[in-house]
Length: 322
Image (cartoon, rainbow, N blue to C red; front, side, top):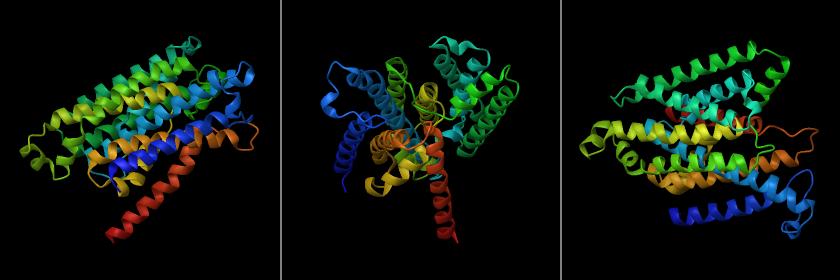
């Protein structure tokens, strides 16, 4: 299958999923009522449309970030969470909740983005300029462990039970009650991050031949590393700022599209973005229509989907190596 045809199929499926997402919910709204002047149209325009657009943007950013990360680290088990940027952004958001700053609408996303920025800076400082894959991976693991521990510390020292519940609920990840303000905040930042990620495509193709071979072909490994850090940091940071932690998208999506897009990293970037958007929009629609008293958190649903996928992938790799 050609990449162009794959992108066309995924793009069409995404449009269908987004339309279904706007109709889906505890109360189903038919397309005929979307442009009316009643409460149904208000639900569509002010609640479901921004939620659907935000879900698609987050899925696209996380999907492309996962594809770049797996290409850069040359590890099919790599996921954006390994960078520590996601947990750094979460730590920033938790800090705003801990001190009660989240009462002001824009402060929680701002703290999350600041946390992601600090995480990117620490990652670059720990990894250095060598471009070593081992050093880069270890730096991400260290940063993720540190920020995760600090987040747990804040939860345990939360001043009130209400603050604890608010922090834990937010960390679960969800698109519930998101508005156009969240779209305006996250969409431009995710778009800028994806621009950085797209520019790494040809360098990642060369990197599949090995670091020395890539350097001989004119690839600047340090520049590639910085573009990967900036791209992943901006996309993941903005996603966490808008919706909390939604995991496994960057792990699952590249594996699903790679057999159809070819095994060159550059050809998997756009399909991964489209498939990531499709996955998040479809999963968010599903959690809304489940017959439960309260809506299942999207982050939990993705973990329930991603953990078995990860174990199956690990088992497959084990069998191939044995």
